[in-house]
Amino acid sequence: MKRKQCLFFLIVVLTQAAFAQSPAQQRSDRLGLGMNLSYLDNWWKGSKEKHFSDFAKPEEAAKREKAFFEIAKAGFKTVRIPICFSAWMQLKRPYDWENPKSLEMADLFVKWALANKLNVIVDLHHTEFDGSIPEAANAERIVNLWLRIAERYKNTDPEKVFFELRNEPHDMPAETWRWQAEQIIKVVRDIAPKHTLIVGFHDWNSRQAMLDSQPFADKNIIYTFHYYDPFLFTHQGSTWSGVEGIQEIKFLPFPFVKEKNPKVPQIAQGKWVEKLIGSYSDDSKAEKMFKDLKAAKDWSEKNKVPIFVGEFGSFAETATPDDRCRHAKVVYSALGKLRIPNAWWEWDGGFTMFKSGSSEISDCMRVAIDSYSKQN
Ligand code: BGC
Image (tube, rainbow, N blue to C red):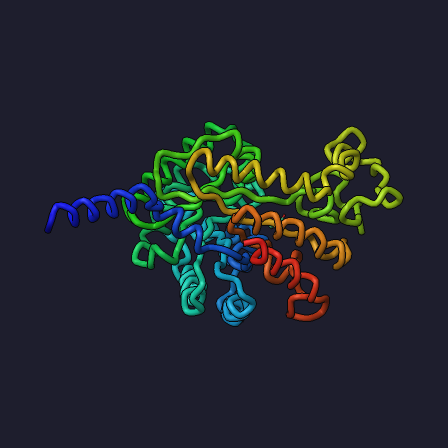
């Protein structure tokens, strides 16, 4: 090679190296619009004596196959599958799978996602159930869960299959979760060196917990948080969240309408819900929500790591479709503008985007979803 050619070649290589993106960044760019598909997380359908291991039925799981097709057809690129693997593993050492047959349902979900050309996130969900089985979520057991999950899926395509370490770790200090996550990362890395991990932080994968934290040493990680703001709107009427008074909030408009702002329910006096009612006029402003998400994006840029909103959405039972669409549009357009990949919670079930009584995405939800790509 002549000197000039050599120099040119060197410049090209150096430029490429300078702008080369990490596998985590490249893969996160491909996640785009995503959807959560529940069923394998429904531990509460099982019996407590069997530590919920009987919660999922193969014949019911089989009915989910067409959902993967529909999700892909609706334009989603990624499916996040919340899976309660914890129900299928022994509570005590040696932590063997107790229900190996049940795991085949998880294998099928992954297979159906890939068959529809979707990226798939294997998400370890609800390890702790309702907290009533203390040993369920001890760190040693969770590390063992990952040892077996990683072993099971290590031969899947790392360009398409992602491992999410733990959904919404809570009731533990930041350092406890960090230590636990580090143990899990070590175990998974030894078994599946090329897969991208998805990791959130303590306090229910909150955005603030992420902003308060530092990335881990491993470079092949996408960081996740859940965005259910304003909580008063997205979780109004919810019975499962355990937040005092929220169950009594119904048909709260989005955004704030002065005449329709609710009275503080008796049970919520002096509690979080009272505060949320007081700040709803500000919390439901599009600019405030954009600012929230922008702060997450700033964190990602500052730390040079990709991020992903693993859950957002609103409970359909006690909010009007128009209010839900307005809320969805604010979040989707902000995520689009900021280029943050995401997954709506959830395809069907309580937070669905479907028109009431149908299995079709409503027109105004479609507009909301499309506002994501319009901003790109
Ligand atoms: C939980 C669901 C819940 C949703 C919204 C998810 O992480 O698994 O049970 O409906 O959050 O609260």
